[in-house]
Length: 67
Image (cartoon, rainbow, N blue to C red; front, top):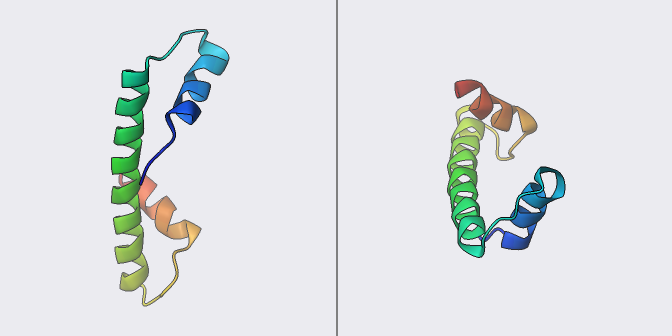
């Protein structure tokens, strides 16, 4: 999964007044993509554990409560 670095730069630049280099935006995007993959894997496992074939918001909330 690829997260746009332009979106990352907008998140930081909008309110902080600090610029984000291309390399930093790439590093942040990579970290977010890895985290998203972990969340997706957990959500699938959680849905299967509850005998469902659809991901629901509660699967994501369940992941968040583990942290």
